[in-house]
Amino acid sequence: MSMMKKATRQAFGDEILALGKKNKNIYVVDIDIGKSCKTGEFLKQLPNQHINVGIAEQNACGVAAGLATTGKIPFVSTYAIFGSLRMGEQIRQEVCYPNLNVKIACSHGGLTPANDGASHQCIEDMGVLRTFPNMTVVMGADYYSTRKLVQQAAEINGPVYLRFTRDAIPVIYDENEEFTIGKAKKLKDGKDIAIIANGDTVYLALEASKELEKEGISVKLLDMHTIKPLDREAVLECLNIGKIITVEDHNIINGLGSAVCEVAAEEGKGKVARIGVQDQFGQSAPYEKLMEINGITIADIVKKAKEMIK
Image (tube, rainbow, N blue to C red; front, side, top):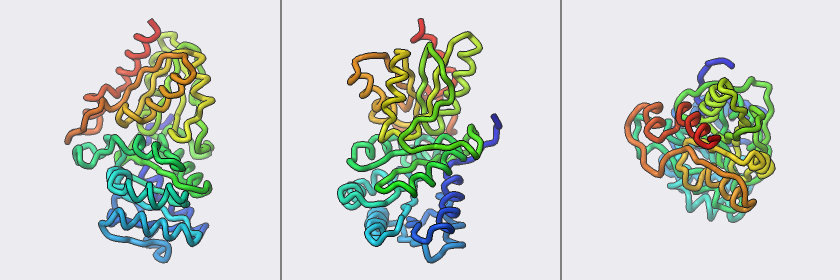
C-alpha cells in the first residue's frame, strides 16, 4: 500500500472533467467556489457545460433540477455544509420528490475543513440526506475509489449525494479496483470482529486491523462507501461474527453507525460500537487533533476491538 496522499475533492475534479469530455450532457453547476471544489479545469475546457450561479445554493439546486428535466446530468458542486443543509429543502422538494437525476457533489465533508472551524466542517450531511426518499448517499475512501464512484453516480439514474474530503488522505486502492454503489468493498475477511468504515476513516480502520492481526485477532473489514442504500447483506455477514465496530468522520447519530445499528436491531443480534464524531461541533484545529478529540484514531479502534473481544 502506497503512502501517497490525495484529497478526494481532487478525484472529483479529475473524474468530472473526464466524464464531461465523454458525455456532453454532463454539466457542473458551481456556487462560486470552483477553486476549492476542483471544477476549474472543467470550466476551462468545457465552458458550455458549466454554469456558475454565484453564492446562491438554493438557486443552484433549482437550476440543476431544471437541467435534469431536459435530459442533462447536472453535478451541483459546493462545500458539504452548504450542499446538504443550506440546500436541504430544495433538494427535498425539487430533486428527491420528483426523483430527478441531479448529483450533489460536495467537498469539505466531515472534520477535514479542520482549521476553517465548526461553521465549515460538516458532520450532519449524510445523516440528513439519507432520510430523504430517493436519495443515494456515497463517500469514497480514497482518490481512486472516489473517481470510480463519481463515474457510477453519473451512470445511475436519480439523486445522489457524493461527499469528498478537503484534506489529502492516504491512497488505499489501485486504479483498477472496481466499485459499485450500494455494494460494500471487502478489504479483509476475518472471524473475531468486524469493522465497517467509510470515507477518510477506512485507512484508520485498515491500520487498526493490521495491529489487531499482529496480536492474533482476526478482523473482517468493510469499506461501506454507500450508506444509502446500505449493503444489508454485507452487514448480515458481520452480524454473524456478532461484534461490529463502525468508524466514520460524521456524527455518530444518523450516519453509518446508526444505519448499521438499524439492521442489527431489526435482526435482533450482534453488538455494535460506534466510533465517530461524538455529537459535538468541531473547532479550529488540525484535522488529526479533531479526530483525536472525538476518539477517531487507530489506537481508539484497536482499544475498542480488544474491549469487545474480552
